[in-house]
Length: 301
Image 1 (tube, rainbow, N blue to C red):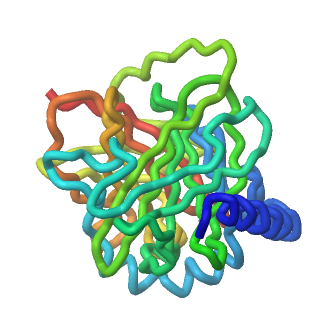
Image 2 (cartoon, rainbow, N blue to C red; image 1 turned 180 degrees about the vertical axis):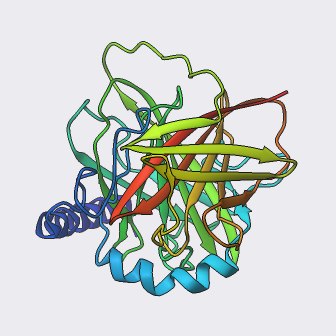
């Protein structure tokens, strides 16, 4: 498809996306009853373009929680996941990369193969065919989005970047059983003062919940409490009891981990061998019909 035709396809797709979001009555609102919180240490949980997410989560829950325990990034050890826009025979090409602070605008992109054609066939991974993670480069303002794909292969989702700065968008997907993560920078003009990360901590508070983090060699575990009592009835979120994204300060090397099978109340994850550095961990879990995001700073000596 020629560039002009692709742009036209983008525009048509975006009209549909925003119309669906409007009809969904809160599908792009992180404060909506079903979707989650934006108050976890500047973390935002958004789900642009999600349709009938609740029943999909519940239907996929039992199978995925037991079978999808491994983490993924989609790059070799020599090339950390997410630091490049082209890798493994695929290339991420974004539409507009400049956004106005606090204003909703479309994030559009294609995944192109070696022939320059838009890829249309993606595997379903955790109840979705495409996951998009957006975070400011100081590891603030985290969002987890699920775009929709048009007939021509282009993906689109509404996106609001609340403050000035440079953000990184990660497209996390699987093709023919192989995981890939490609990244692109997004820019919001204006005065920007990067914020230091909070000190490393084993606890985090979010939306009235207290989350405790403990670590063993190669494994991380989390316990969720509310009012001092362990939460034992977490609901499936995208087919699992929780999701964990780890980003390394500096290059933003990316790792997305699914929980190990195991009984509640612990949410346990297998972590790949981490190189020395400072990492930001974003744990997402669902309870009482809402998705919550707890953020932790982790230092690896």
